[in-house]
Length: 100
Image 1 (spheres, helix red, strand yellow):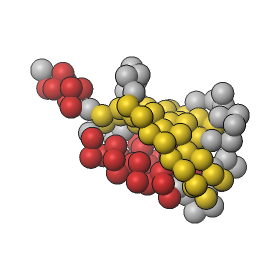
Image 2: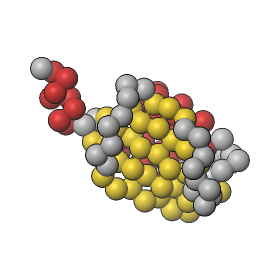
Image 3: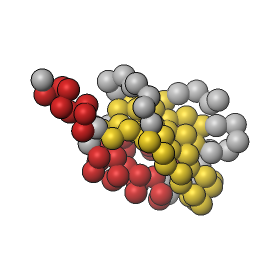
């Protein structure tokens, strides 16, 4: 039963990050941070130059990850971050997805 209560209290968001976020290890950095925080989801580059991700987990942990994404890795220059609720069904891990 704890599984259903955990999923009921989970927060899932879709995120788009703008700025200098490709070619600066942003995806790898995002995956490492998400795994460290125990989040489920994925991250990928988009052809428009943004990075897209989905994070799912404890609401406070997801909010922590969003704050981290506003800074990104040292070489990144984040100029914008858009977040919206997501209903996406995710696997048990955090993964890197190919560019779309």
